[in-house]
Structure formats: structure tokens, C-alpha cells
Length: 261
Ligand code: CAO
Image (cartoon, rainbow, N blue to C red; front, side, top):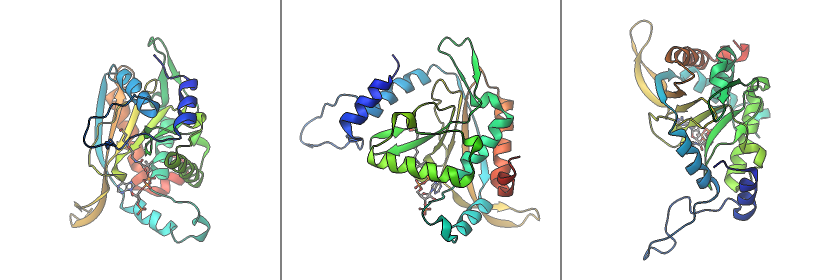
């Protein structure tokens, strides 16, 4: 019942990323029948497996005012003109730094649930809305990458998603995932774990909202909601809460990101 390398290669070869992902009917006067193939077939199989996992969801809000300011200031640096740096590379790096401290969140398991594999590399899957539907390409070895390296690799994968040209190795080997649904919309989302991974985080849309500062004055802050799903057979709530606290501390104090603490 697993997706084989051959299935993905056949799909990439035959479809060049084209499906009726938008759901729009070619002929609006009649019903349309369509074979389930490509990334949609992967989604059907993966999500059916995912539902066997006892998920728990932990949510919080994160203030991204400082990080948004930092990102804006980077836009003025001419050397970066070629590379788009969204908030994502910072989220990916913060997650990797936190995974170092909480390795169970970067672990995988086998089909019979007899072993836990603590993965040394942080291969972070990025849920992506591509021309061919939901894909989760992987940024490999994030623990060894700087923010700019991550941004370049994300740019490359987004481009591949747009023209349906992922290499099979791009969509293999994820150990943890991030879904930024907020680039489209939404405040909260319960993300679904991709087996054999044990955890995933989802981010909502950044909104400017009133919050109290340390002097109890109301100030505008950029707020993003985060929800983390974990496999409760292997990860407990306290571990996930600590992981998200560490992630949040770095995002709220972006200087920490560069210290790898
Ligand atoms: N809140 C508000 N704005 C956001 C945002 C957020 N959470 N995330 C991104 N944006 C903004 C970006 O800043 C960018 O704006 P500017 O061009 O003005 O800078 C714009 O939205 C587009 O961002 P992007 O999509 O080009 O870049 P990204 O790195 O933030 O995201 C990716 C990349 C691949 C995560 C995103 O394109 C995507 O596909 N998101 C959907 C993920 C998804 O489908 N999840 C569901 C999985 S379960 O079905």
C-alpha cells in the first residue's frame, strides 16, 4: 500500500504537474470522472494512514513584530535581490534549533510500531500548494544550513512546485513538517501528521492585533497562531509544549536564531 519511487517517477514523467487540482469542471454541463493519480493519490494514501495516528494538538500565539521588521530591513540589502526571504526560512531554522533539544519530535517510527528512529538530520517537509495539488517537498539537513541557504532552497522548491518539476529526491525523506497555511489565509488549523513522521506544525495568517506591552499600554503587534500536532503514542504534551516554547522564544527574539541556542 506504499507509494513507490516508480509511482512518483511515472507521475512526474506523464503529467508534468498538470491535474484538475482546482476542481473546476472542463464541461460544466456534465459530471466529470477523474482517476486519482499523482500527488492526489499520494494524499489519499498518506492521509488514510494518518488517521490511524492518535493526534493531540497544542496551540499558541507568537508575536512576530520584531521578525517582520527584520525581514523588511533585509529587503534593502542588494546582495539578496535574487532571493526571496519570507518568514518561512526563520520558522524552519527556529524549528531545527528546537529539534536539537527535543529529538523525539524529529524521530520516525516503523510500520509495526516497534522502534523509534531518532534522525540525526533535520529534513523538514514544507507543505506546499502546487499546481499539482498538495506536495511536501523536503529541505534537507537544515541543522547545517543558515537562513539564507534555507531561503534559497525554499525558493528552488517553490519554483519546482510551480512548474511541476520536483525531483523524486525532493519529496523524500522528511523527518518533521511545517505547513504555512497563513500564506493563503486562516487563523487556526489542525495539521495532520505524515507517517512515518511523529509531528507537524501549522502557522496561520499574521494579523496586527492590540496587545499589552510591559507597561500595560495597548500596542499593535503582529501575531501569528501556531498549532502543533504530535503522535501521542510517542510524544507527550509537556515535550511538545517545551518544543514550541523554544521555537516561540527564537521567533519573538530573532537575535537568538543566529546564536543557535
Ligand atoms: N501570514 C501572512 N502573510 C504571509 C504568511 C502568513 N502566515 N505567510 C506568507 N505570507 C505572505 C508572504 O510574506 C508573501 O507576501 P509578500 O510577497 O508581500 O512578501 C505572500 O504571503 C506569499 O508568500 P509565499 O507563499 O510566496 O512564501 P512563503 O515562503 O511564506 O510560503 C509556501 C511558501 C510553500 C509555504 C506557500 O507558498 C504555500 O504553499 N502555503 C500553503 C501550504 C498549504 O497548502 N498547507 C496546507 C497543508 S494541508 O492541506
